[in-house]
Image (cartoon, rainbow, N blue to C red; front, side, top):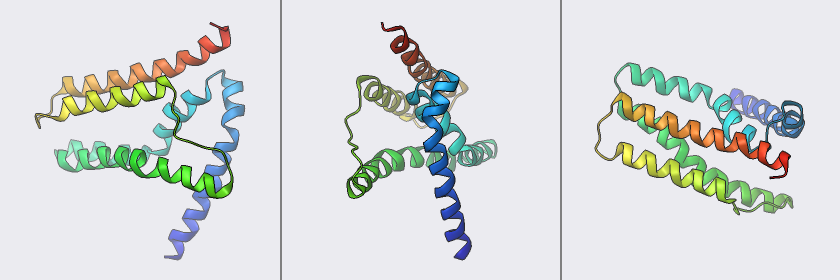
Length: 153
């Protein structure tokens, strides 16, 4: 139990460091804050979870793989995001759930493609490719967003 508390504190401190350096990294790498926070940080932050899901998939335990993958996405969208708003309110930090058109459209597209991909209960490499392409399209949209706003168009 002590290790859990220690690791939680260390994770919180490292997370604070990452959050405080996002804007500097955005300027240095000429990437939008949205691209860094929506595409890059989740890949790095959930690397262990992704690795576990891949290992279960190789062992042909797709129920566990889907549970890990979809459970994480559901937990973040239905619990962590609203909880962040409440914690920000308690701390006096302005934050709301007013997402812009690209963020809302990306979430809608991801949910739509995922639900159609999973509705028949079977898996195929083309379905995985479709999901990866959907992720790539969303990533490119957030990448291009910075370029367009920097050009003024």
